[in-house]
Length: 181
Image (cartoon, rainbow, N blue to C red):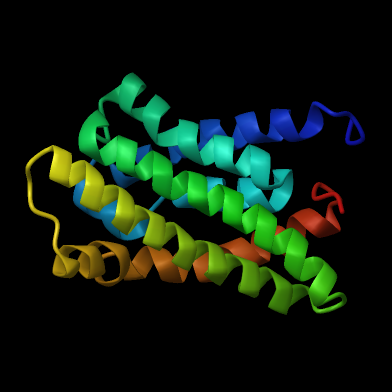
């Protein structure tokens, strides 16, 4: 099964499902979700496990499907903006992990952290651009202060969780041979 072409697609579907369900752990309180970023974890993992293509699809679909199914996050502009942001996370975590694995061969932990931090920063840049455009279309203000607060200050607990959990999960999945080289 692991050598099947459908294997990454099946795993990506699992990550989408996790991304839809995990935010329910915050009790439906948006403020807690904005701090813990539960949707980000499965999307980042999908890039590491399934590669950039499936990571991108997982990231783009997860917030849109969650919005359709549960009404949270609100479709426009929040879920649409998150679709761009999370698509960037999934794509970049897969792309950078693949690239750093070749460049930094034998340095697993450093490779994972380099890919993770690069994906996290790149996704936040995409979020800032998407929010500037979408909130502009919605005729609501989006300032530099809102970007910094949303992307870094308010999200700090979630960022810390990602920096702890993602490398541990990636190493565990590699050891279990779920991540293919």
